[in-house]
Length: 406
Image (cartoon, rainbow, N blue to C red; front, top):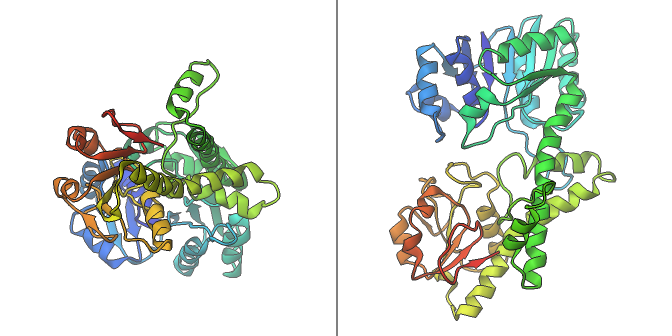
């Protein structure tokens, strides 16, 4: 039996995928309400194919509980935020989970850390917890790092098809966990050491963050000197060795906006490019806010209460709003003591911010200016409804005459 610890955006799909492919799985989470929802036959977030996967897993006997299980294999998939002052990884949730596992696990058990951590985190935090309990790592307890590599909006497909990395002290143990993941993963699975596995996951997201920052900085340069950044990028990308990304209103989610900071926190004197890139990305919501005020002045709009932000999630067609650029923008606006902008997102059904709407038409009726922060399919299919509005499109999806862009 596999005990998956943490049934959030990564742990739940992983547990369901294992169960639906014939592996006996019990999922554990401290959140009683979440566990009750799962046991009532409902998923806890929206994701293409997740409900179908959930039903397959239920038929295969998956169980959810708040209790840790006595078994020989644990997969820890809990959040790993960063300390906003030191920028270092905050391993408190991983530490807490491992401590609970050590209370009940038998000798010979394997603990798989799936949560993303900075290189050396397992050495600094997890190993001492295990050793303090009197276990000898490699003899009494096996330790593995198997970082996830999926993205909200395409989780089910990516769990099945993405390549994976397994880090282990003992290659034989690594091969055993590789076989476990091979029960569903069709991609290539590489076995390496733990620190390399830690580093590769963080580097992947850092690479993406740096490339996004380059596009965002180009947008700022072009706005400063009245150039069309989209036309420039289009022409540059005609070069066979150039592939510049599209700029946007910021970076959210729990990967690209977080993981690179782990390297900055641990190697502050060696991460100048990464640090500057993260600063650029983090500055984009304020850049968007300043553009809103500039456009308002140009169009003669005086009432900030008549401006609306379309989109609360950190990316299109998901209900995940962790670290979203819209939330960052609202936080920035709050520091200026201004009236919060109106906000609408079709994927967010609960009220999480002030002035939040739950109906597109009502939202549009109450605003004169629409700022497109997220390119959900809904707004793409309803562009005509924006014809009489001032439109500031940060995602370059609206082609109405007079639309403003980054």
